[in-house]
Length: 111
Ligand SMILES: [Zn+2]
Image (tube, rainbow, N blue to C red; front, side):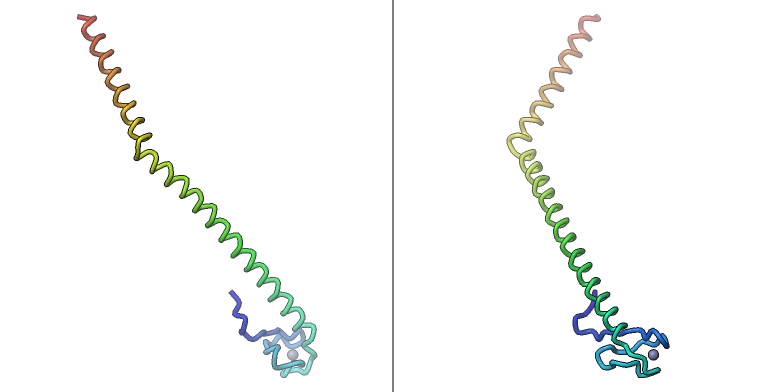
């Protein structure tokens, strides 16, 4: 992430040296004007900042959605652990009991 206070560095198009854009309007190495390079660098930095904000926004949104899912999951767990969950567990136990009875009846019939 870019620091707001970080000095903008530009690459001189003529001698390929990196210089502080804030301090130099012309390249201290070769004297070439840096205006265009500065504009390019500032535009790039702005675009990167927008990109960064967009990323942050997406991350926050995804976190919110994930939290919503967690909330629903928690709700399901809570319900499952309470009366409804007990009813389901009871139902399963009864069904298993019925199944065993049927099985036993079958076993007796065979004899
Ligand atoms: Zn230069």
